[in-house]
Image (cartoon, rainbow, N blue to C red; front, side, top):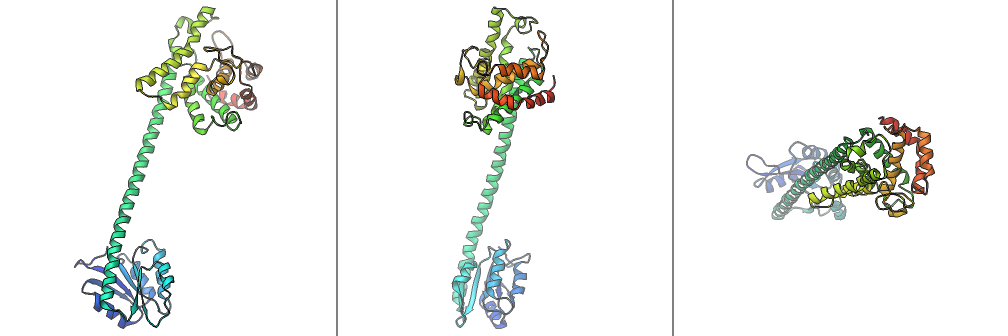
Length: 371
């Protein structure tokens, strides 16, 4: 809203005839500050200045640049497009009302002008402009608020995801302090799982479950596959030789202990946590076998959660290529041969086929995170 020192609104009259400019000034100067321009070009320079007018009264028939072209240029510029434009045309002129309104004019007046009508039209359109400016200002404010709140939500979401990642890695690292495995085992196995999932993402059996979000959750959850080992006694967990049948029965309990620990954490929160769904499945079922001879439930085939079937291959491959106190490390080729031999018995056949297709990627991942 442009005002001079006396609080008057600013009007711009554009007309190539000096008498018309003087007449408009005479009619309006008591109420408004009136600026005049005797050509379209001069009128545009005033409109585009640092102090644009609040409303423009624009003659249609002018040499060099007519009123339609002036209006078009005004409405093209973000700085002037919201200024109301009232066309002023003589009765004898062939005025295209539809064209004028289509260009963005809000009204038109017929010469010779009627001072009361001019004053009334100007007052009406300034009032409408004030209302429009108010709504636009509120809309801009609301948009800024929405953008600010959206940014805050995104930031909070990123913090939450970071906290989830830290929680998972802290829990997984806790399990590692009880075992002979290193942090590299966690990085390798979660990366194997992700590689397998991405390879199978568009397979007809798996496409529904292996969405981008679920693959990300699988990757984040995989480090918790052995969290239950914190509950296994050292004499069994760290035994350098083979386990007795009784000791192996105790070792098997790490699957149930891991699942129960995650469930207990959820219960403490008083809610089921979406990102821990796969963690529970993996911890509980990654030692199940495709033929039903695994543990702890003896599940078979598709009854074994997909997350656990993926983890089973990742875990076995990494165990085979890693040196343990009770065995040397197998070569990549030996590990691939052993796992491939378990197709349809220990492992899901389709996942084994995907494993074979990307076996070289497994080797690359293992090299990226050495023990």
